[in-house]
Length: 289
Length: 316
Image 1 (tube, each protein chain N blue to C red):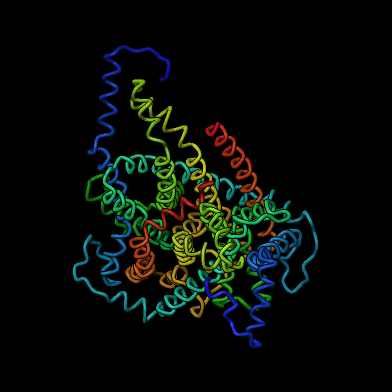
Image 2 (image 1 turned 180 degrees about the vertical axis):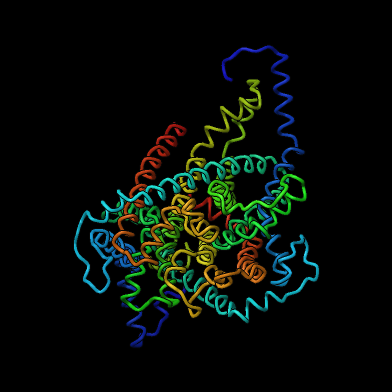
């Protein structure tokens, strides 16, 4: 459009058109559509989960007699509660491990030079770009060798591989935003290097740490590929995997599957609801250069 | 920090603590970085080596020791039409998801950026982030449920609205099954793209817009000559990540269609899983994995270089 000549009338008409496109009505209409598109599947799962497994077969939008029966069937008859416990344990353990390993590593990359430091950092980014599906077969076989199939530890190890590089990267970017003078002042005051990190710099980076923790927890909570490969029985199965318990040979318990989906979504939805700001900071902070 | 270790009584334990702390301080890089690097080495380098090694072995025969045959699996892969089918489906899937996600992400981010009230904008953001929080396998089963031929709510809606006259089996038709999995994939990726693009929009200095206004630029010209160039880096980053993750997607196609009907949505990751985990052909699955890894890394490498150029262009 640039450089082309056009009359003042045409200019005004175009200006009016774009003003209309930008008007609050259009903006809110777009956002309303987006929110509808995003939430409708979730609402539909919620509505389905309030039906019984039989009631699903005469299709209505709203449950006629809302009941929590399919939750009961899912959680207790099918043992889904064990997956809930597993998911809670595995996600928490993965998050603790990843943050404990990743935070100090990110700090080192933000503060110190050492031989091949750029190469090491590139390697860490590389492990992040590497498609995890490529490692599924080796992981399966290695875990078979070490007897880690069907254990929670096996899934935690996979989670550490998946999210540690990400957390090192994010934490480094957060540490970089904190001036070095802060470390130096602490050193002048008589802190050791470790103390400067623990007691002076770390408290300042807490929002970033929170963002990393929340992201790792949510990602571990969502993880499917490795959890599905490594565990095939209820003793270690996580929620995303256990949802398939309701797929039978001949029929699917749709309402119980919906109940399982709701149970899987509620914790992460709550985290998003309460920590939206940290998630946004974490997602974008991890990309800033 | 004030209770430095001069306050610690010099008992045996105190001395050990002090020694540990001294060593840690003298080798702080190793002390803080070592554990992470060691773990990454064990959980990444070892399996990758194993992958390369396995891909050069014939492993199908049961009870027989694996036989070293460096190119056998690759040859089998390249001459297998089902492999090329999977590769083609992967391309369709990843680019479809990429296109839908980035377009929707851009439109939603532009709209969000127009909402002046912070409270309202945060509410929208939270609601849009919800789909990002849903485990991907749950996304799959949800969409499978919505598009079910007899009991699906989509069919019911379309019937009630008079758009369809009889129920349609979405997941039984190759084309519509692909459309459904791509839509499900995009559904779960839109929040991420939106957030990244919105951050890019918000980093554009207001003066640029003021200057454009003074120059009498139309809204569209402003968008083209101010917004888009500034947006390019974040658009590229969001695009690469979206494409890369869609290229390796497993959970959504697996739990929506399981690769069906008749391989119409069998992307490479499902293909790898089928041969490697279900059929125990580790060598062949590893060779296919190597192919997928190679393609991802080549594309990512080119892309990252392009992004870096773009960024230096803007900073100049």
